[in-house]
Image 1: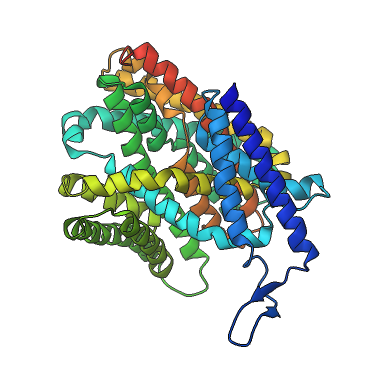
Image 2: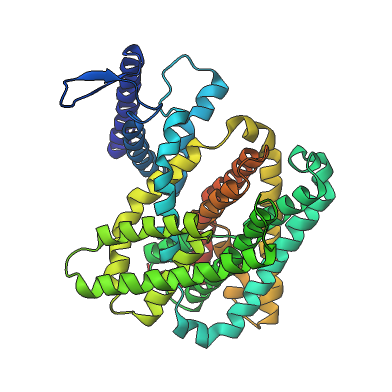
Length: 455
């Protein structure tokens, strides 16, 4: 109780302090004093530049504090970061028409996009590092059947549900036929995603070890790798068909995928060389490479997430000893990076769109859960998997987090300029938020019932 009171008091104090600073900045007319050789000259600055650091600090500290508060109730910290982003962001402030100072103005969010880029790259590196060839060789046939069955169940149920009810959903009914197809395909594919990060964290927290734990992790990472390729191909096809310049969409998709793999292998080599030549900490190297992967994504039209997964996979399997320090450095960076990434994502959630989309978000969640359960029941029978895996594996496929939000960010970027891009992004984040809250407790239940938790 004392820790809870301290966290709540710190959070309220942070919000009050930032609100006062915002009020003082607004009273000063938004001007800044730039010292130089000619003295202090009041010069106008681009909107959001001078105070973006305040938003960054607020989102980082606020996401941490609210995440710790939710953790006391056995809820995921990433949900706290998302929720704080919503509370401090401009969308809720505008929807409620508050007379108080805006804590995170919309102009400042665009200067935090670099955090998104870094987080996507690190998420990819971590997810790729969890894919181990030795385990896949031993259980490859079983994992493949489970992945195929689970993905098919989710894709078919969500696709059929949207096809049947799409006429009653403005997001779909008001679109042209090609747009409706792309939206349905993206929503169904995103339903397949779950969270290697949450699965790994839950396994470490409970110290679960055994067939159930290994199978759940293998299915998660292989499925998400397959999904990243699928979604990247879908988004690349959209970008290619809507590009102003000429060129073959098939070639654009082929380069998008093969180029991502090539860039990932290249950066794996660079990280391995850095680990060999550098004796100290590798945090700065990892940050520079993360930004470089993101920059390569923009310049070369590749998928940063897929490149990161490729790099992590290559490091973990080709350079296992040399990559230990690299992944340790990434683990040290992830808490702060995740907090900012999820908080910025929450600040971008369109509250007005979400107010009209929540029935669709709930419907998609129910279709996804049904598809997961049905697909894995069929897959376990096909692969001849015995209990407790057959009974409880579905609970480990429910959580969504980093990879899902990273893919939602990629979809938002691919559909930028379309009038429905923000509504789609808000819907995807709403579905992820539901599964962030429901998923970890369900997975904990499955792990306990599996009998593999080390008490």
